[in-house]
Length: 221
Image (cartoon, rainbow, N blue to C red; front, side, top):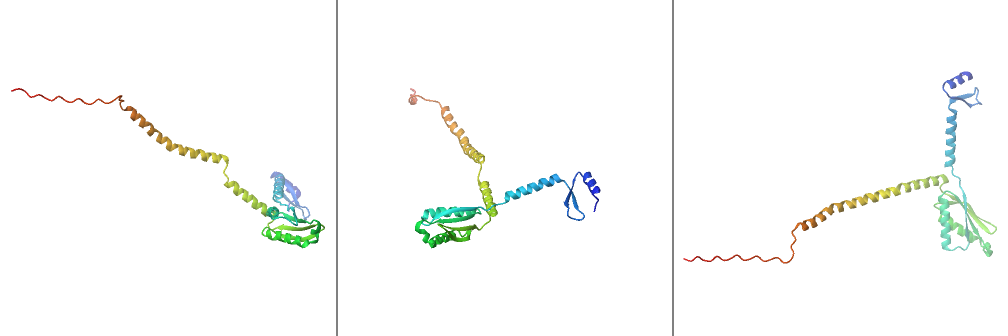
């Protein structure tokens, strides 16, 4: 236990701040620290926590009771995308006219959708009818933070495999240089052939035939 005056003197000598960390304690507890640095680090940690914090959203998608297969596949794709991102999905079926008297058809359609996306989500709120509408809530299997983490990881892998424009240009230049080198070596040989041909004497017209040597005559005795 140190007196307040002594503690202040120690803080002044060390060029630090005397910060009371437990005022309710008896005696109160204080700590020597760089309060400005402590405040900055605390703010940075809070900012990083807010950045990593993931808020689950409630998406909504609507179906008609008599929906054709193509529209069903499209809307199911939207539901899968929402669930993959870690968001909840509120599925709504809108009844028209006499369709309100056939709620079991709406339940079958919602159950079909839940079975089709069972790998990504689960039924969080069972189908219930409210007037002309029937709703069901699907919850994601993966949490929002996990989905975001996986998405960032996939993006990093894609970026690592993707070549930049400068790398592609450099490879193209290197390939062009290797292709030009053999052609440059063959060019001098082709140039020497015409030079050798040009060094031979040129002859114009037909070649004259050689003259026969004269026959020697016998001497008289």
